[in-house]
Image (tube, rainbow over all chains, first blue to last red; front, side):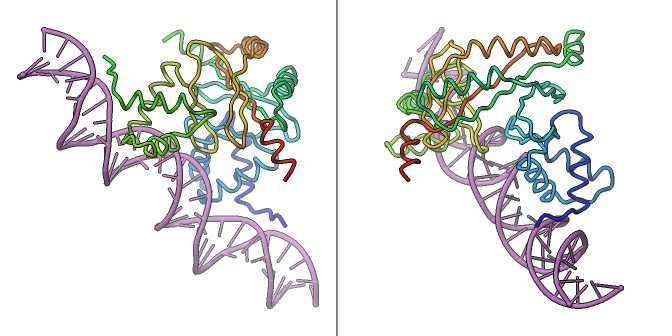
Amino acid sequence: MKRNTWQREAVRDALGRTEGFVSAQALHASLRGTGSEVGLATVYRALADLATEGEADSLVQEGESLYRACTPGSHHHHLICRNCGTAVEISADPVEAWARQVAAEHGFTEPNHVVDVFGLCPECSRAASSR
Amino acid sequence: MKRNTWQREAVRDALGRTEGFVSAQALHASLRGTGSEVGLATVYRALADLATEGEADSLVQEGESLYRACTPGSHHHHLICRNCGTAVEISADPVEAWARQVAAEHGFTEPNHVVDVFGLCPECSRAASSR
DNA sequence: TGCTACATGAGAACCGTTCTCACCCGCTGC
DNA sequence: GCAGCGGGTGAGAACGGTTCTCATGTAGCA
């Protein structure tokens, strides 16, 4: 049985209020900053749960796991700003098909795929070029 | 100035002899196994160099960095067996174009992308289904 | 051959993550 | 409303991969 605790809610809320991808550590710090005395282990547990339930997306960057609230149930990918972490959900139907086809061509079964596009968002592009 | 040391050569060789992706730790162990007294730090340094010079590909899986020798200079992606690590180089021109287009649509500049397809290679598929 | 600066290696340090275990508290049945 | 159960929590330790430190080694140049 899964319980509803205020800690789990706090993590879900904090994640929902965040624009782009955040690390577990950053999320924990921001929760502490707003006065929520949530333990780091709990943040990790809650994020892992949200990710397995499909309520959050996760990706690994520079050895850190980053998380982001996402629309559950829909398979999609992200366009992520490598400077500020802002993310845009993108659908990638052509890529899905391509991945399946490539896997089949080489006799691979149960294909999964990791597809993420990184770049500089419009804002960070402006900041970078004016610098 | 970059020096040629036997340690660096040993790492490059060991990587070249490996079929799929290997972790730095595993590579270090196999070097030790063949009698090469190479330090772990040196293996990490050599792998990082090879990766930046384009002689090796790297990816992160389950918190570990995995490396693989690859044909330098050519941009490509991989079809990787999630059981045994065997990897096949695949070209993904349609995906390249798609990534550039998606980035441009959202005003993102300097697009990069991470595209990897995981699955079970024919051999591991057989083993899994016969089990 | 001698010099110099980069490379090496052992082990410590580091850092993100997971585990442990005692305590807490949300649910359920009464 | 109340008690009891069992999953959830939190502080800190443990863990595992990676990076750093610094004394020593050695490739490459003159």
